[in-house]
Amino acid sequence: MKSLPWIDIPSLSVTRERSHGRHDTRTLKATELTTGIGFPGAAQALRLTRTRTDRKTGTRTRETVYAVTSLTTTDAGPEQIAQWLRGHWSIENRLHWVRDVTYDEDRSQIHTGHAPQVMASLRNTAISLLRLAGHTNISAACRHHARDSNRPVELLLTS
Image 1 (cartoon, rainbow, N blue to C red):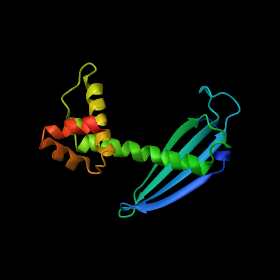
Image 2: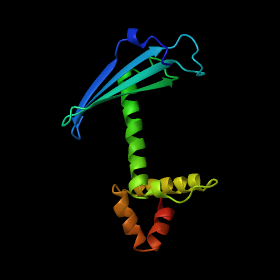
Image 3: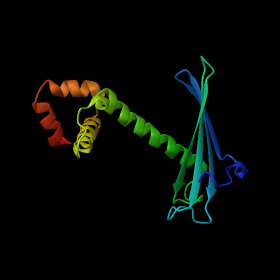
């Protein structure tokens, strides 16, 4: 993917955002694939470059991510792809933050066999059930359900 002629490919989407004390710029380039690159069914190759500048310190970081999609340029335009990529990371960050902060997953003592995957699945299920029930603050919802042993059972039965 890195060997594709990205320098010759024009930027299709540039978004700028100011929030959380930083300035973010995302630049998306996409190219139709005419020859195989080792990904069966790939129709487009994508390169997303994120540049982040801390407004207080002026420190600048740059991250480049590559992706492929089976969608052609007529199936998905650059703005749509940029929105999907942004939405994907929003969901990922939202889930992992809750698992790390609310469930303190990083300090878990469970490290052997399939137990870590099982516990992650159980945490994800609990988070999903709470969100389906309309809870936006998962930490508060966990405390609420912990006060009465019938509440988690009701949540399971009504979801």
